[in-house]
Length: 497
Image (cartoon, rainbow, N blue to C red):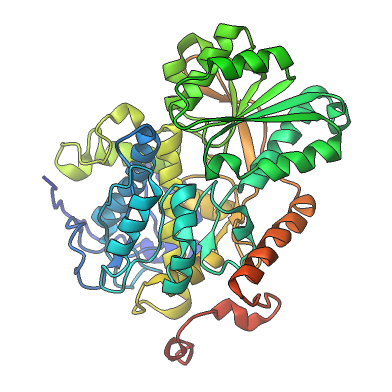
């Protein structure tokens, strides 16, 4: 199916481009084929599921493509797989710089159906696979991430939970192998409150107002419970928090109660089928959708399209813009889908429905795929091209990410994704979101980036992380010590530095 097309001669210019880094790649992409000019172009690699491929890095996918949350899992993991395929086919794998031997990315999928028990089973299956073991765990499920929380720590395999997960894991001094990247649930609630304040003319205008949080009946849904109580006390608004039982396909009684209380704003902290049902039921009982603000998992096309006319005017927060106009997403579409120049004119992208390429979930998968790649490249830059790209080195990369504007431009996601900088202390690194309104056909941005108030959030993070450390008998790392940069890196690799 895959066409091993001619690699083409290496441009003499490539050495000069490397000096300018990835930002030069962004400039060149505007005129022609998109390139990461600071990475080696090796032999195209297409044998993605051969986990014993020499020199490879293993990125398992604890995916879900069936069940009530299939739209999220299919788009998210589809975006990741497309990034990995493109890198393998165009470059032969990843490398820290031009001249290094490419490291092919290999993967397999384990269907979890978004179920924690299945997620644990999948983790146990893949934790010993691959030449060096998995470089990361990426379940896209709060329930699964909690279920394997201690396992990943003991096995030294980092678990990433972009825009979800245990909020306390923002504290990298305690949660050394967990990374709630980009926007934590507390960040999200704080940014939503700031957005509502701006809508009303200032945060002081929240006093006396009524806000209701309708949340999914799961660990994910309850993750912001305490933070909304904190915000209510701080700003003086009345708060109600109402649970909707999984999966949320019947909400008439809930929305009748909401309509009677008549809150000024409803925060929809939903997932899957719960979201369009909420919008349609709100319209049915006469509550205005313009007053409903969706959270980070209530913000996709899969949420609003099934709701039809009831979704028009609906608002939601996001960490990555939808659409195909961004150079990386555009390149994936043109090379893997239409005209599929990498695949002999045939579609070889992961999305069976090509209309889903460029959607919210897909673009989040693209962003996360790039985060995985950049974390591995960060480790390669620091320790050299021959290291085992296992969980310890991936953890180092995830803790030392720096997606500044130049890096975002180089990867072709500038303005699609916000800046992201992680550290020993901060395993989230983003803390910002942007709001979009659904006009019945597309999402339109209605705000700039809003950054969560870390002065309010960190004390609550420390409260949670210290409690966890006491329960687990953990000693906090001293993030002020420069030696902590090399936490858990084997001594033999430190000697070579």
